[in-house]
Amino acid sequence: MPVPAPTPLTDETDTRATAVPGPRRSAEAAARSAGLPRIDEPREVAPSDARELSKAFFKRLRELSEGTPEYQYVRNTLIEMNASLVQYAVRRFRGRGDGGDIEDIVQVGTIGLIKAIDRFDPTRENEFSTLAMPYITGEIKRHFRDTSWAVRVPRRLQELRIDIAKAKEELTVRLDRSPTVADLAAHLDLTDEEVVEGLVAANGHTSGSLDAPHSEHGDGPTEGHTLADVMGEEEPAMELVEDIQTLAPLLERLTDRERRMLQMRFGEELTQAQIGAALGISQMQVSRLLTRLLAHLRTSMLEDPDTAAHPAVAGRS
Image (cartoon, rainbow, N blue to C red; front, side, top):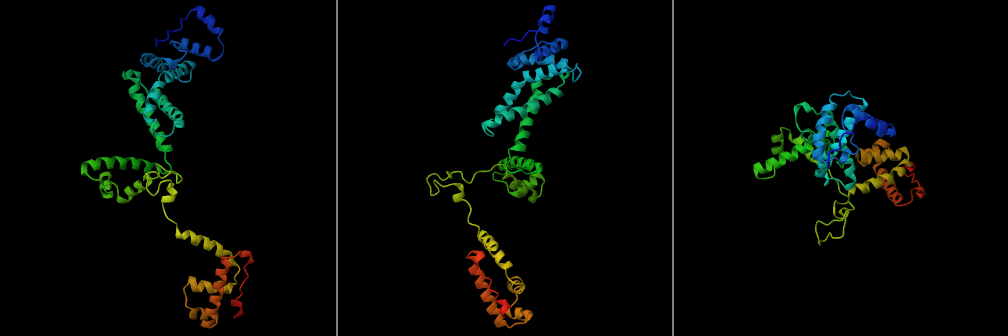
């Protein structure tokens, strides 16, 4: 694509410009004031032409005062002319995340481009792309590091995960086997506990749905099942939780003496003789009362709690 020619600064041009309202007139005025061509479609400029134009624009940018219309025109034009660098960098990351994330990645990469433009020094005679690409890819990598974790973990552990992954690759080649925790700790100058913490944190980087089809075993016995069907096992403690929740309102209906008797038998693990001595009754009475009380609680747990009758067995002693 040919480089857009500078707008001639003639009286005729000035007359026409005054007839153009709004932002275009302001941009044309800023371009004339900056002594640079007015580029109507900076994103359409070919990369080779953009490199040559950028040199002139960068040189002029460093001569202008920040905040002036001329400075804004030159800076914004540089951003748009070099937007192709962002698109080029984004191609490396298209396999990460779904397609809906591409627009976010482009925006993040553009932030890196803007930082590079603000920090580029044309007097060093380096290519702008040499500085821009590390800034752009750095911002995109930071974006993935901060947003792609399924479970949020501290930045320290995110960085440790990367270090451990690199150490694993290096040590696997060097040792001709998978490195142990001790190998990783020695290589990274960390303790075994810190390495284990990093390995555990790495599990939070990705997640899978328990409703996803279980297809790893092909036509095996798990065909047609979800991960929830083939992973894990029943937790016995869940039944205990349900029993406690059912038992709690029943215990509230007992008298203080009845609750005290249960506390001594099952909390303090006292013998029936010791309970009888504490309550001033015989061991036989303690045995009979506990049997009757426990039978009532078992029956009531299987019934509607509102209809369960209070035994009042201890009060009859």
